[in-house]
Image (tube, rainbow, N blue to C red; front, top):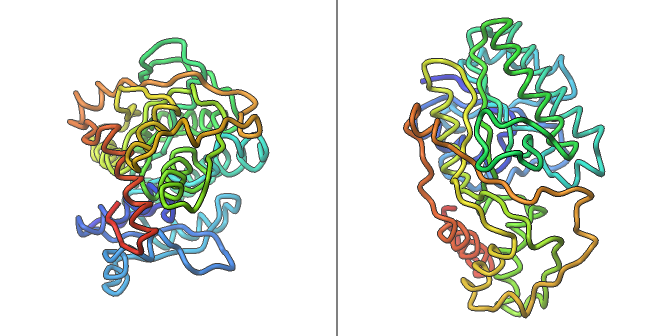
Amino acid sequence: MARILISGITGQDGSYLTEALLRAGDEVHGLVRQSSLLTRSRLDTAPACAAARAEGRLHLHYADLSDSSSLQAVVRTVRPEVVYHLAGQSHVKISFELPEYTADSTGLGTLRLLEAVRQQAPACRFFLAATSEIFGEPSESPQSETTPMAPVNPYAAAKVYALNLVRIYRRAYGLFACSGILFNHESPRRGENYVTRKIARAAARISRGLEKELRLGTLSSRRDWGYAKDVVEGMRAIVAAQEPSDYVLATGETHSVEDFCREAFAVAGLDYREYVVTDPHFVRPVDITETRGDASRAHRELGWRPKTSFSELVKLMVDSEVAALDGRETDG
């Protein structure tokens, strides 16, 4: 039974990772921020999490990426064997509105947590969730571990800083510091302010007569969309590798926002063209035309490859929204 610490445990990836680790018999500790709300929906609704708490295998600790003393204290107390660093402000559009906060939580937050590990648990394995956004408007397609980084938004710039820190700490201090360069990955647990969740939710609600239209920004942007559960398995494979390194996790396929709308509304029995309206309010100041990842190294060295197709992912998300409207539970 390994002791594992997760930042961002209440997020999409953190909740799936927690469930997978608990099924494997590990002891999971999570960093959570002080809040007036004690409910954490993604964890509270998972039966495995409730059982693990009763068994003493799931623990939550108050800390904040802006407060190095709290991070030092948690790492010193838990003495983790693995740290998965998934937290930070990760919404691209919001990063333009809150650039300083994004830089602090996503960039400097990584530095503070790396320092806590270096000082308090240097034998620990450290994983950073990086992002395909670091490539900006890519100079090549598909993008691999060697593609030049050229960020075009504050979130991506913060992640470039964080990824470079991982590489520096790996070389300078000999830490087992590794990262996954994660391309877009979605699920029914995706936050409601992300475009894929907005589309799935709108398709379900419009099909039930609860809404009349969906307003979106650019429909032509193309992304490499995978399933969060598949990506979480890739994270675990990266951490379990013999040597620390950085790996792209992606499907190798690209689809437009319009493609996502078409598929989602079709699942609900609708034609998206009758309901989707473009709205300049949702257009980002700078956007990336297309991303497509090359995960061949992860497949070759780690045996990882995605299992869920684009169509299966979209159907899973829309079906989950419909089930929620019907008061039914799903295992997304």
